[in-house]
Image 1 (tube, one colour):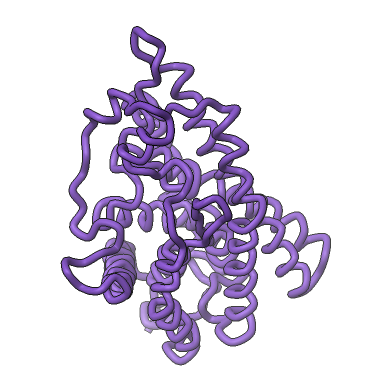
Image 2 (spheres, helix red, strand yellow):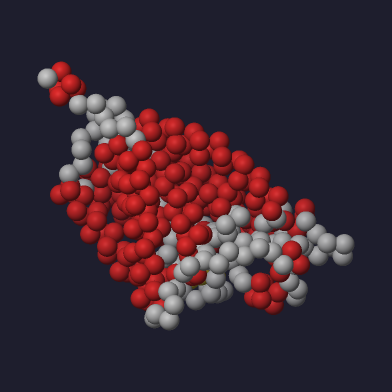
Length: 340
């Protein structure tokens, strides 16, 4: 679902980039109001779950692959606006350092996976969890919400692909960017997400949520907490199980290498030209970003080791970013000390 460079026109990318600016503005404001300073580093850990989930490529018959995102999971644990920030930062790191998703397409990718996905998923989760009380309702809501959320995001990406040949063609009528119309892009994207990729999103989201609720309740932003009070400082002991789970996922990321082929709409220009019979001219001459670790590979290291080290680097970058964000937030007032 990571839209690569040059599949969307610069104007399309610009529209989505501008559309995301107020979304990020609102998200930052809401996160500062609702996520306590002591919990902010944990939001970075939650973002790391998203980063790692997107590294586990899942094969689909026909040669394409896909992955989970876990945006609804983060929305359940910390709120939908916090998920927008967490997933957006994870997507930026993936694009800049690993070439996973285009730099120019960051706005579109964030719109799909960091905005549409968690908002839709969290809305459905909230409705179901209110109707069905207790942990059972939470888990059912998380499963249904995460499934619908990732398919809503996939539909958005498919439409963004599909409108390109309608809007941008050369004098002969050949597409300048993504050559597949809506009639092809929508079913091609949704067939995988309605089946295996949607199921993977459910498994990741429900599994991690059940784990957190059972063994590490201090990890999540508990009901009634806010930036001004009502949230206990998370203890290191309380989040150790989450850190262990994160480490296990890092070690397991090379399983994503078992899936052969690229995700639909993420082919190289040569593969695309072979599939459609020509290379769209604007794509062939488009701008490319030289990532430091393209496709999560590091130099001549074995692919599995490069994948693990990339996972470690990605998780570390997310933890550092959210630590820096925490440093910019005002510390809560210690009323007892002030009165003393």
